[in-house]
Length: 333
Image (cartoon, rainbow, N blue to C red):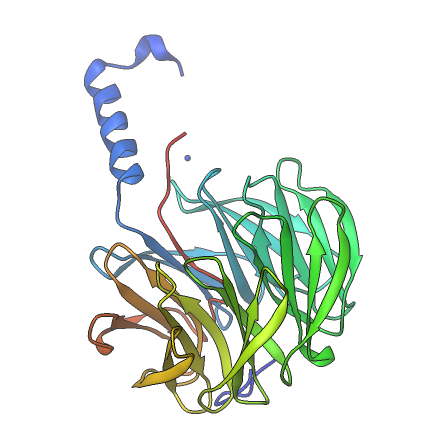
């Protein structure tokens, strides 16, 4: 999982003036309706860059654990979960303050991470012990440890949240977990070294990135069967979908490109040159843009999804990875 430098890898109410209350309400209202934010893990300097996507500016660099990699966002609870491989922990960020509010200590090296639809459960991939941990997001205690394939990495829930898909890199398959019983229902053979995955915007298809095969396997989530295999660029890594599921975007780490897939034809229709060693990738539906984390260049490349053209490069921290769907807007309960 490690890279070499080029390729690898928020009193008293009696004392508050009305004007202050108005200010607080306005601030919260702004956050609730704000443009999305990107939460970019920087493995090289142990931070998360928080980027305001309305202005494409970094508004905070949050110190987290050692060697942060994975990202999962829960907008119901306004939490961002960051996996720290070397400190063996998960940092919990408050989206409203951009502060770490808790550090979940683990005995394993966490990589992939995702959160249940309700926000009550956190799923963490244990890279070295071939299992998926389930953590109660309210008390941060582990509730399950589910044996998985070799070197589990990316994880994606189906739209209903009833099935968790886990890419097992060295087993060359995707495990399917029933989130009610916490049992594996079956495994789906894919290409060599599956790592990142993305559910299509319409929720019908799962796109699995096969690093060593230079392909993407397309899984029909209703049948849990591979229905297509799409050649992409060299050493692909992560993927994301636009809102309606008509396009899938795949990072190619050794080609420094993003492949754009038309999901009607299941073919690559464009290849976009981006920053060096692109890894994490996520879609901003509000602005119809794609954001790509560059591990080599310490940047976030911005792509206009209408034109497939790079429109900006945003400086982040060292060795940006952003493994997971890292874009979201905070909400007020």
